[in-house]
Image (cartoon, rainbow, N blue to C red; front, side, top):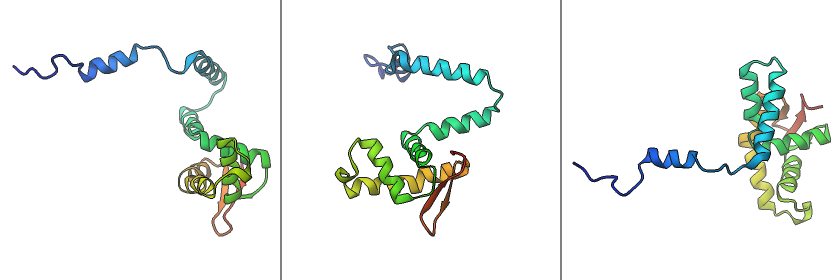
Length: 138
């Protein structure tokens, strides 16, 4: 008989232990989830639509990008949008941002977030002009 696991928690026990600890998110998260569930209950949206919406909103960077596009309400170059997202993420002014910080946001938007938002029908992207336009946000 193997003594493997003696004196150590098994993977199941570790998972079970984690599941029974107090939540990290606190009551605000629980209240928000309950409010969203109540709101969804009042609507007749297909499950796929709800899942897609939550996927789009799952990333803070995407939410900030959508906020930027909604606030401006007009086409922006992707570099300008990236700069605005970086300002919101860091709380720094445009002058305080490093070029590397803005470049990192730009690359993330270009490769990950922008394609998702285009597929969701929220923005359009003109690659030749590097221009993003709000579609379903205004």
